[in-house]
Length: 247
Image (cartoon, rainbow, N blue to C red; front, side, top):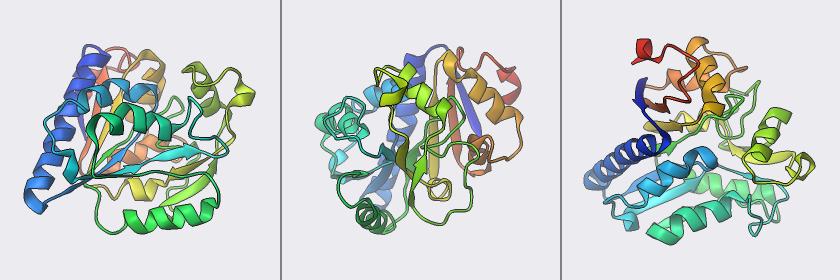
C-alpha cells in the first residue's frame, strides 16, 4: 500500500492521473497495448478530467467498465455508461470501451463482457471507495470469494443514499436497487490498483479502511492485500485519521 496525500481534490486528481498515464504508457511500450478498468461517480471527476489530458496514445488502450445500474437506460443522467462516454471516451477515443450493458439479457451481456475481460490481464484499475467503503458496487458485507467476473448485486441503503446525495437522482426511491458490478476477486487481479478518494464525505470510509484488518464489513480493506495498491487522499478525506503515520 502506498498513500499519497494531497491538499485538495484537484491536486489529488492530477497526481492519480499522472500515475495512471505512466503505468499505461509502460504497458504500451512493453507489449504494444494496455488495459484499463475505469470507475465512475463524483469522486472520480478530478482524476478523469486530468487523465484525458495526459500524453497517452489511447488508440492502444482497451477500457473496461466497472459497474452499472440495472433498469436504468443509458440516456439517464446517472448512467455510468453515459458518464464514461461523455467524460472520457468522447475526449480520448480509446481503442475500445467494454461497457457493462444492463439492457436486454443481462446474463448474456455479462458472459460476453467476461470473455473479453479475461483475454488478458488488466494493467491498471481505477477503483474508488464508497461512503460505506464499498469497492465497485460490492456493498458490505462483500463477497470476497465469488469467482465470477461480474455479478448482479443488491445495493444497500447507505450506498443508495450516497447516489442521491451526489445529485444523480431526485429521490431515494428513484435510485435503482440493483446493479451489475465487477467482483472483488476480479478487481484484485489487476496488476496495479489506483484509488482516488477525495472529499470529507469519504473520511469515515478512509478511517475504516485504514484502521481495520481484512473484513467483508469494510470491503475496501481487501485493497490493502494487493501488492500494488496506490491510495490517493486529500486533506478532507484523510481528516478522520492521523494520516501521517500511514505515509
